Length: 518
Image 1 (spheres, rainbow, N blue to C red):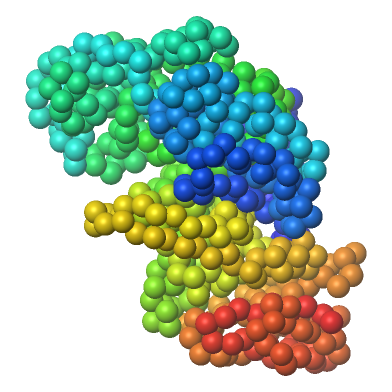
Image 2 (cartoon, rainbow, N blue to C red; image 1 turned 120 degrees about the vertical axis):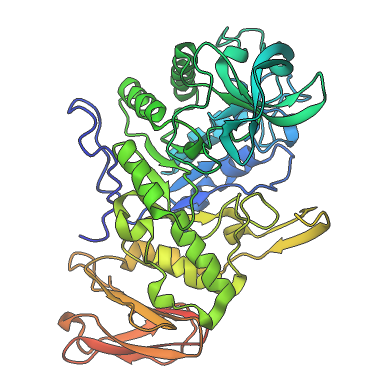
């Protein structure tokens, strides 16, 4: 069955005694339940609790939540500037008790409520760095060339760096571990000289960067803040203990792993194996290895991690962005070429946008609004990949921030109304053999012929990035004489399937149509 959610990521890595990935999850859909500019009012966990039943009925199966721990900016932090992994909105640290999204108690109740409603919950895990240290230390470093971190531009010398984390507000509760300069590979600020640069910390575990796959900037181990050194066995042991505590506390169902291209793959092999062993749970995992246009790099990471995790399909998202900006000049018949969903569909989490690609963010790579229904059809109404919906595309969003030009910009993101209908079609119709008609630069389509045990299942999808078009596509002889209607409401004309099982399906210009039997 092409539509079974084949999200297997073990590939023989784990022993027979450990739980295997559930292969019976059909047509699952993930929702990224936040965006970068979600209001810093502590409301998200309570909102999730209120909406859980409705989201499940809407067609959502899993919620990807933002980082739940305290960031260095306290209540205004989106969570990616990690300060204390153990503070889930419980301690008075960094100017607040609650996080941007609420308190620890509200988080735990929201997760329980979501799971009772039939939703699975994936937690965003940020292990690359820490920020907002409590004290400075005198640290031996060497300065490096930011564009080639393998090139040292100084001899070893001493700086004053914020690398001591004592977490006085938590006072040793849950863990007495304190981070110091021996726990980090790099830092970006010398307090004594008030100098910003990239400094390689010279500690007992290494005089250079960690061994990672990504060779951008020579070595892309260092991303930001105090970069964690996974060569230190005390660090890896602490992160295992924290992972156990985090699961015991929240009882989540899976992970979204942040910034994995900046960390050794060997660490996650060990950490994920440990977490799955101690919890005896599948713990579905998707990693952010963000390399648009670099499919080979993503495939190399999958090989290095033995298929332990899925990856977001950054290549497909990049194609969506280009297609939306080039309009009819883009050859849409090639939109799936050199993508993860084409090469490794069982490990591809497909998406249209996320919190990093949205307007004014660090990896801004937007998909124009006119193209979003087409893009969502290509992830929600096909039988490959695990689709993830972005929060503003369901709820809309408005915010103001400074752009790369130094100017303030007012941004309004409108919801994509077709998503609701597509989710219904995904649950009810997306079964059977898929036939692809990717044979025209401006008009493509596909069909799924349904399953006998699912009456009414089967679908024909056609879209155009130019003028209105049509395509002759096969549904199968069992549909002979059946009348098909466009459920997205773009085309009024009905389609009658001929005796050979074929129909001529139409779509409007710059739009998508999805036909099912009337």
